[in-house]
Length: 360
Ligand code: SF4
Image 1 (cartoon, rainbow, N blue to C red):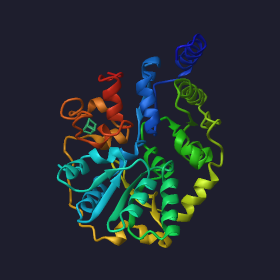
Image 2: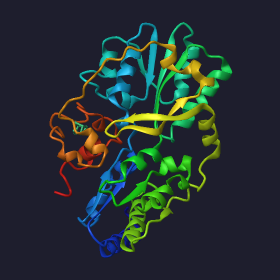
Image 3: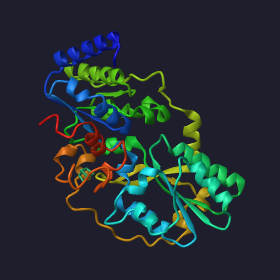
Image 4: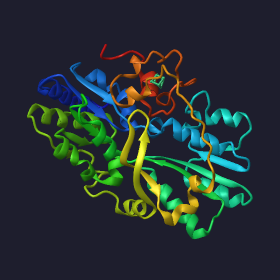
């Protein structure tokens, strides 16, 4: 953001956006990396106050619902199990519990950087059952699929997965109608796998402009300029502003692997509820690696902090600052809700890069 050429480009873009914006408008982003970039680079402060940028359900840790976390807690408590997960999942609160708390009580819960690490752990510990907590969108699901295939090929019998993968298009289709969102910043990482055409239903079916965007400040400002252009001319188009990474048809190798291992299923999203065809479930050929089929899981019925507003934040109905717990009873050090845990959560981004409401 420092070169004179970049500064000039940024000024041109922000001038264009200010002069072209036809009315007060709201743009939603549905990618945790966008959420973080927008907060980190102070993008909101560069835009006219009539243009609101709000975050949607773009953080995979945040959208994993409490009932699924309860399943994870039940599995991680089982004798003989090594439970593995990404680091962020460790601290997501469910009721008054978390995987981190179970770990301090002596349960064998380990952080892995990839499902492949979990599979290798199973190979190295043949006398133990290793469970991997598989969360994430289309970006991470292909790797989970590849690891399931690898486990099958290698005949690993002590490895299973608690799958909670979600797919973005059905969630967007459920969220946008009737919402205050005028236009959508589509997730660049997800689109790299699905292809930009996976989001064509937004202008064609929902009548709202959409742009696939990269993550640099200029990427985001260019994308917003395209959305404002459409809003000003009452058009709804899909523009791929990230062609250096995203093609129209996506990554066919990754998509084929997803298709081979998973089938679409209904999934429950925190804040959005149950959405048809918005999740991925292991096909019957991979049932041996399904923790829900291997183990009898007695998940507790856990209740979240009633003051937590994560659901409204994930639907874009309120900003993190509007939650009564923000910055007080809920901080990244002591999160009261899922959106404060992951660095890609909207509450964590708001806390880290500006603790007051820019639209107040
Ligand atoms: S501030 Fe904390 S409790 Fe409130 S919505 Fe965000 S994560 Fe949930």
